[in-house]
Image 1 (cartoon, rainbow, N blue to C red):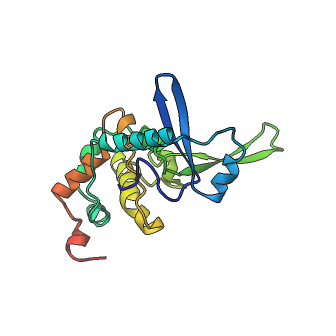
Image 2 (cartoon, rainbow, N blue to C red):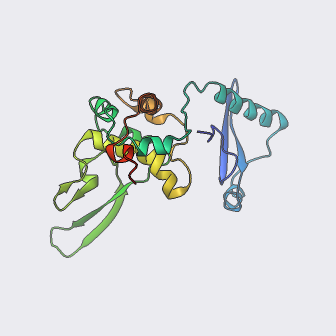
Image 3 (cartoon, helix red, strand yellow):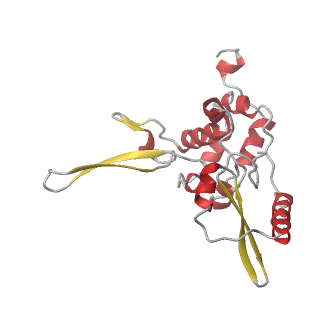
Length: 212
């Protein structure tokens, strides 16, 4: 995803953990004025040349250990043009809609709003809390949930992350961390799903006919 595992721009503070015999420290890099404000109140010392070199080696080693890849060339158009692909049904047979992938994703931001009152009816409270697009209630309207099937919910999550996000923010919503793969209890792999659709595209009738 060309997003790490280390960040180079657009961050406040970056930490690289160093653990070896007799040492457990973090090498901290300041990336913004806001980060500098936080860092000045920390009890820290300047990193040694040896520690900076060790942090660079950790990053290089981590990059070398990344075992999966995702072909992002034309991925946005591929996913948006294959909304009726049979692969969505296949992954839905395994997906538990548990929301683990959204819980551990560093860029998922979906929320819901809860309204509550006390027993006397004199106090009301509105609270916003984290939610997941995999829950039925997330897309609930007065007539019911918009996305009733696991198929539609997984398609929404993956297509938003890898395609619609680009329309909204100008970049992919995936940073390539692999947490969704690691924490999926049934082993669903977002890179595998994208590759399967790319290997045998099934454009919707509208796309095949050249529609919008």
